[in-house]
Image (cartoon, rainbow, N blue to C red; front, side):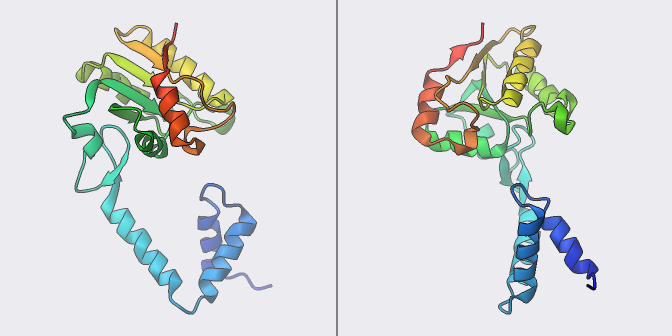
Length: 201
């Protein structure tokens, strides 16, 4: 069968999205190229608009408008500036905000330690975290990672790194199901987990 390079490139790009395997990417690509209502162009324009207008907050890593950087959560005066909640990704910030259980500031690591996938400490935003603790005079770091093996390893690493700093280190209470991630938790569970946080001994 004839290979169409633009179609192959589309499939390859779609398959790089989380949760999208090769078969699903092929079905999505075929749906786009066969669509007669201009969906491909609508999608392309939406992607370009998002690429221009959306950025990662230079301070916490949250998703924000390019024109509002740092983000609202970093500059809002009513938030507790001495407590920093460390999460894996911007999606976790959104979930915790929806819970209403935390009023401090955030720091997204943009990943977690995963030797199997080649992700080490240098690939995470740990250096920026340490700078923020000093520059912003942080008094407490709340580690809000999932309960899987990689998240536990990341939490242990952070606890070790932060042990030399004059900062209280706590972790959200384990109201989360074992093996789950923050982004899949409901608002009530998250709020209880944050309120029940414990200092890491």
